[in-house]
Length: 247
Image (cartoon, rainbow, N blue to C red; front, top):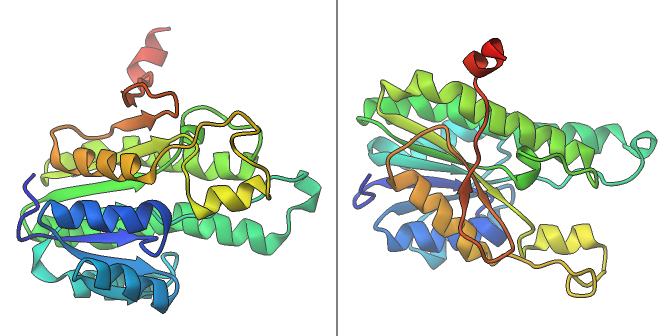
């Protein structure tokens, strides 16, 4: 899909992958609607690419009404990137607020974003939805079961809904990064050094470019793993219902 003269909504635009994605999608010709939960980072991201800023919570349906209105009749792509890391301590220490906010952002933001944007994309002749999942969405990460829960839900949602959107000319895919050099990762490491832990951090620009590739190339229902090993991204293979029925 050609993004020239089209509009793209990018959530979590105020930092990390979202910030770089604004630059990458704008360079591909799109007008960016930069969304963040706070006004200041949303505005900064929008100003950097001559785009439009919208501040709001992606788990709030009213935010999505505002985003779709801001995108107008040129909406061609949506990058559902906003999310929270969750809780990596003992399950009995998980407070209810953290649980509810993580599920609302990581799952609700994807479901509500898809719900709001599909009619607009359909009316505009089709388009693309890309979701930031995680390698935890395809391989369980025992360091953070709550994060794994939400990202596996996202990967399943993408694969399950993709066939029903295909006839409308709408694709939906997930980019599944390893550990990315973002403020979220810095917070998750709790002051520890990634180098000392032997962790190879991925440049957020690589994730943003992968999201752009998924939005502009043929295919749907893809869960593309981006690893920190220097190897190429891999479209993860999942068994189908038919495969399991034959087993």
